[in-house]
Image (tube, one colour):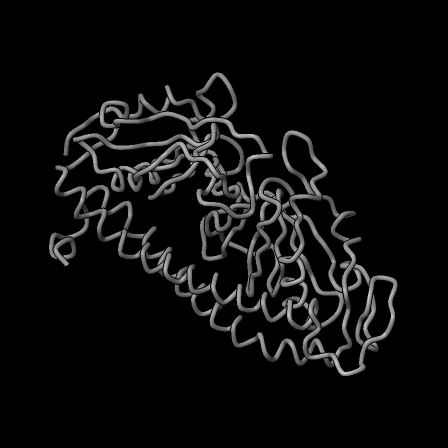
Length: 360
C-alpha cells in the first residue's frame, strides 16, 4: 500500500457544467447527473467513459457513485477519473468509505470544494490489486443493476395496464359510459381528488439516526440504511424538492427525508392504484419553486383523480399484485446485496479480507 493525495492519482477531478431546466427532459439520449443523482435527460453530453461522481451540495453532499457511459454532468457533481496509478472504479469505492460529507465544513462555501478533495490522503495497493478488489464489488452491483432493470420493466407493464383500464377504458365499452364534465367515464365512477384516497405527509431529517436495516429514501432514491422507520407499510413517496417526477412505491418499513413526502391510505387497498396514477402525472410541470423545483401539499391534494368503484379497484389490484410481488422480491434481494457490499467494502479497501476470498 502506498500513500498519495487524491489530486495526484486523478486524470480528472472537477465539477461538471451548469444546464438550464429547459434543457432537461423526461426522456432523451443522455442522462443528466447532478449531486443528488440523475435529474432527467438531455440531448447534449459533456462526459463519456467511467467515473466516480461526488455530490457537492445538499442531502447527498459527499455521496459517491460510479457511472459508466455518456452523460451530462452538472456543476453540482464532482467527476473523478483515475490516472495510471488508480483504477477509477476502485477509487470510487475507496472514496465512498471516507465520509466526504464531513469535509463540507472545511470549504469557504457550503458544500464540497474540489480543492479540499484534491488534498485528501489515500492509500492505494498496486493497480492489479485495485482491479481485482473492484471486480468483487462490481459483481454485486451488476446483480443489483439487473434487478433494477427488471423492476423498471415491471413498472412499465403495470403503467400500460393502468392506462388501458383507466385512461383508454378498454374493458369498459359496450354502453357502460355516461356523460361527465371531464368526458366519458364508466357508470359508478367519479372524479375526485388525490386527497380523497391518500393523506400526504412530510418526511423528516435522518442525520441523527444510527445505521441499521431500514432504507432511507431521498429524491434520488435509496440513500442509506437507518436504525428505525418513519412509517411501516405500503406508501408512495413523492419528491418535495429536486427531481419531482421521481415517484416511488415502497412496500415495507422505511424512512424518507425532509425533502420528500410520503403517503398513507385514507381508503383501503388504493396505494398501487394511486402510485400508477401519479406516474402518469407530470409533477415537474407543476413546480412551485424558483431556483429549486418544489412541490406543495396543496398541489398534490388537489390533483384531479378518477375514482373507480371498489370492485374495479379490487380486480385491478389482483391483476397487478403479482408484478408488485416480484418487484418486492427483487428489491429485498438488492437490499441484501447492497448491505453485503457495504459490509465487505471497507475490508476490501484495507486488504483485511483473506487472499483466498480475493482469489474467488
